[in-house]
Length: 184
Image 1 (cartoon, rainbow, N blue to C red):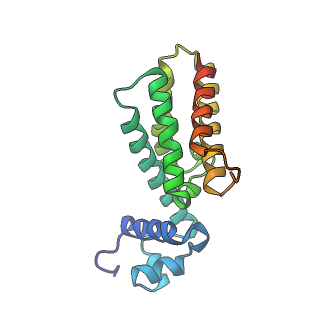
Image 2: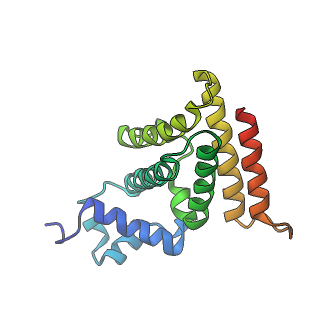
């Protein structure tokens, strides 16, 4: 019998809390089981393997990011929407570096559930660039630029990659402006 209150969703929540507290490198089935107060074999009633758990966690992170980003751009268009999306992206990575690291670089090629979640996130980006009148191909290139800029900057910042004394917020705003100019 699975432990009362322990479900697949609860295991994912426990694992995410572990990653939030100790980082991705601390993630193991034994650590999740210990935190959940069960023996490691009990987790197999809810997840098939550590890889399965990581994919479920990635799906949850992508859904969380989608909800956050959609909320940030709702009611905005053009430059205002793009800037809000890029700022939300950076803020999420800085606030949740462990969770962010769980998301695969190409989630559209994951399981059907992960690909669906990634498709929903992609739809937010598509909606944001729609107002620029781009062809489908140009929109794809624009979204790639946006993602590369936000991901690269935020990942470097979260990893301590900016040691110079100049204001990092100012640098990011310059990056946002550069992306916006590339869309016009």
